Length: 335
Image (tube, rainbow, N blue to C red):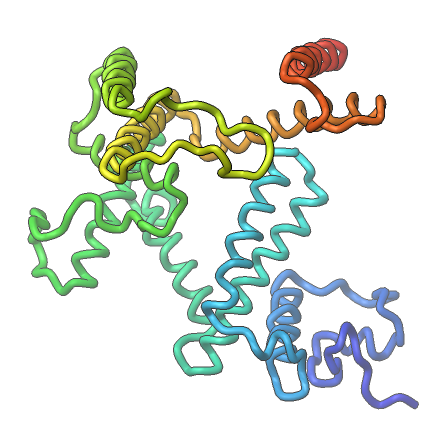
């Protein structure tokens, strides 16, 4: 009789909760209870530990906190893409990939005795309870706005405790209201969070028309700087090697242009904030729309044995309008 039973690389004899599988000699739980959520999570933690252990996966064992960071960002965007596509089966898989990042970091931290996955879970649970006193305590909050105000006040108190501020010191004069907004996040998201924080103390436009006025002002400032642009002025790069034929712009002017374009982006982010639109998500959807339409154009050209490089600009513009019309027709038929 087989003494040890392995399930996805885990020696089940080491885990009593999986004894039913070993006894049944099958992955399917025939006549046995299904594992709980906690047991499933422990199994994932055990798999990660096994991959990093001596004799585990060489690639996983080589990874560091820094080498894993790009994958974390990639998996996050794949989660967002699955949500945008309303692809729920795919989302389940992508969330698993994102959870893997958490398990990876926690295992590496545990190996160097910094913290463990237990610490991660404890801090998460405690934070959720502490930040929701209207659910787990006696605080009253009947609206989302009240919840947000309570949330910010609680975060401020937490920051004071971390910094060792005296009890009752509610001024917190030494700390910027913008503290805690990471400069490592995508720039559109950072701009949204910075302006939202400033708006909490009333530093904001009174209405959306003021934002449109600001957008016009920033546009005019950019136009003013373009008067110093070398002749014949800004032009699209021609076909061929990227960068060929580009006008050489003096460095001081290039710096001013970059600043003004950044100001335009910042105003647009604030317009999005006023309209309760996530700028990152909005731009991502526009990118996908452009990709979809452009690839439709390429498909039509491919049907004639050509590529986009072979078509004159006038034909590309005509195909672009056809692509838009094709999408409108498809949307009307689906409604």
